[in-house]
Image (cartoon, rainbow, N blue to C red; front, side, top):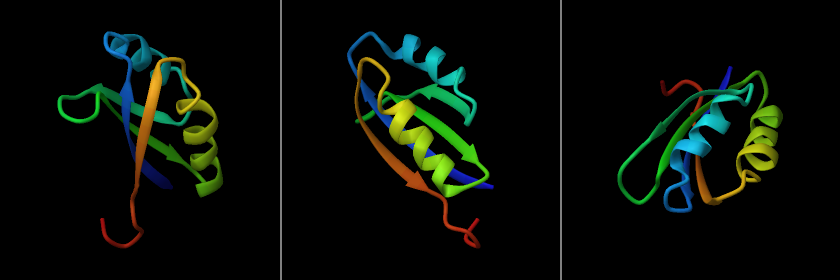
Amino acid sequence: METAYVLISCDLGSEAEIIDELKQLTNVKEAHGILGAYDILAKVESDSVKSLRDTITWKIRKLKRVSSTLTLMLTEGQE
C-alpha cells in the first residue's frame, strides 16, 4: 500500500467545504483542518504510486478554492 500525506492551502473560509469534498474521494482516507502554514491535512492511500499521484494531481489539486499543496510520501522500510 502506498501512502502520502498532503498539506493543502485553500481560500479563507473554504476549509470545511474542501474537507467534505476530500472525504468523498476514494483514495482519501482522512482529512482534517489544521493550524499553521497549511489549512488541511489529507491522508491518501492507494495500491500504486501512479494511482496515488493521479488522485493528488487530478483530483485534490483541481478542487475549487485549493491554492497549493505539498505532498509527503512515505518511504518503504522506514515506518
